[in-house]
Image (cartoon, rainbow, N blue to C red; front, top):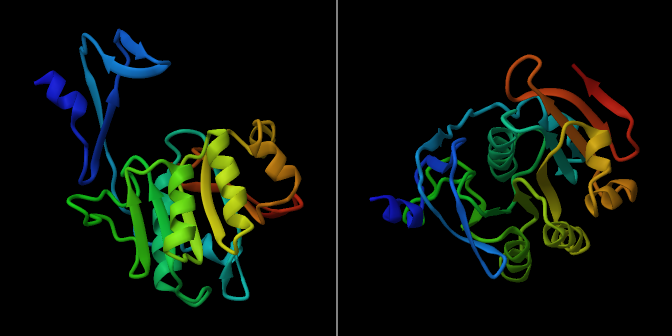
Length: 231
């Protein structure tokens, strides 16, 4: 049962990762090959919160278009839930933005929760999803074949991710991305990503916190670091 679970793709609205007890990791060619002696699993159940991005949309749009936006958040602060609703609103359109094509690279099936090729979460009527696809490669694929107006990715981290984001920005696409970090200062110190911040590649920075519960916006900054909103 356990070996089968290791190879299973956790789809629908569920995903799992291995928990806090002792789990020896098997490495092959500098990559994780397997996990031994699993004593527990931590199962997280994602869910939609339709409308949770309502208060954010006015701050990250200009002239009915979305701004390049980076969501900065520590773990468990609701950034994936927020970015999911942003995708839906950008795709469908509303009073602040004209609906447009959105390309989503959903590397861990957390945004769309696709099952048999069908998204179980509502990501909008003009959204294309690359499910279980590496972010850097997926962004390039979307640009070359799907002509998205906006590209959305969750939890960027590798140098390949950052380089692909910069490439997409120079191809006429607007970017919505998120990153694990405590605040603007910490994010600006990250390798490569910090360089994009200093070069003002992103137009908006949204910082989340848990002071008043997950998904609460602490600050919103523009590309020059000026505070647009503080809660």
